[in-house]
Structure formats: structure tokens, C-alpha cells
Length: 255
Image 1: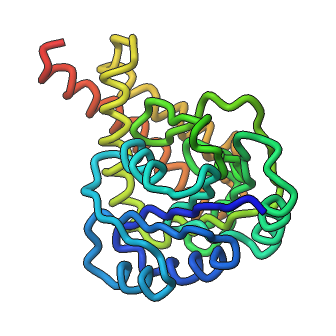
Image 2: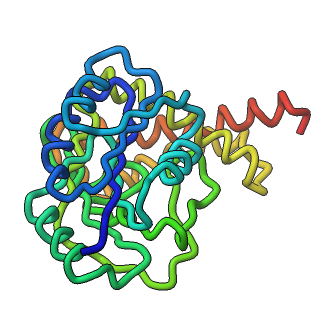
């Protein structure tokens, strides 16, 4: 049987952490929680489930993931965000993969997005369901350069598992606003550093219009009632703020 490391990145993650760790416990030959300074019961919950707990100050998601992967004891790694709960069917399938052997260097897994208790059609910048990579062979697969919405490169083949992870994101307006600030700060940093575009001053006003149309109308979020409208506005706000902040970063750098 192939041994499997499992890690979760946490920060004040007590809301769903018990459900996550209980779900993955049958799979884990090595269970790791990397915490960035929680003040709630996150660390106590992780310890209760026998996880190794390592502490690292948060700078961006890429660096945090890279650190976690390097600390994993086994080559094959299954990882989750602290609001992603794997379904029993998915856990059973991964158990079968452990027994039969992993045929691919990476596996993309179905992820359903739950916002304020409702499964939605999309959440900027992805549709629902999406299929992020969540199982890797860490010695072959590397992280991309983005600080947020990071991806993986270097795999020879990628499998696809159509059994869901339930992503319990955005359970309140306060959380939407908090994550909007965090994600746009990180996205703006990437944009200012990597993008060759020069028209940020204009795009901070034009891109929100397209973002609202794409992520409310075209995506089907209009079918999701009040929650869908909130997410359409979220997409527009995100587009505005990331270009506004990227413009500010470039001006401060004299670019």
C-alpha cells in the first residue's frame, strides 16, 4: 500500500477542522497541520486528531504550501484548505488508490463551492464545480509562481476524480470582505510583478463591468438568488481592487 501524507493549512480554522480531520483520518499515514498563528481552538483540535502541528507566519499561499509539502514525510501528498471537507465517496476512492497504486503524478478533484449554505454556479475566478489539483507526488510536481490561486506544474500525467470536496467558503459578509482584502492584496502583488500590461488606471474601472457580467450573468449565478447577486458584486469589487492596488504598488516602485 502506498503511504500518504495529508496536510491542511490553518488560521483560526476551528469551524470545519474537526470535520476535515475526522474525514481524512482513515487515509493518513502522516497528518500535518501548518498553522499561521491561530487564536481559537485550531491547534487544540489538530492535536486531538494526532496531527503534527507546525507554525509558520503567513506570507502567501504559495510559500505556505511549499513549506507544508517539504515537511510531509511521504512522496504522495493529499492536501486540503481548512474549509474543504472531502466526501465519504472521495475518501473511499483515495483509499482504493493507495491500495492499487497512484497511476498519475497529480490528481485534480471535483470541488463544489458552498456559499452561505448554498451550492453556487461560480465564485470568481472559477466555475463550480472546479477541479483543482489536490493529490501530488511531491518530488515531481512543483508549485507555480502565483501567490494566490496557485497551480501545479511538472507532472507527466494528471488524473481526474469526479467525487466531491465540499468547499464551505464565505459563510458571512464579514468573511467575504475579509477574504476580498486578503486575496486582492496577494493578486495585486502578482499583477504588479508579473503582468506586462500598462493600463491599470483604466482597467480598475472597466474590468469590474466585465467581471460582473461574466460572474453573475454568464456563469449562471443569477440563478442563485441573493447569494448569486452577492457573488456578482464580489467579482466586480475584486476586479476593481486588484487593479487599483497593483497600480499603487507600481507607482510606489516608480514604475
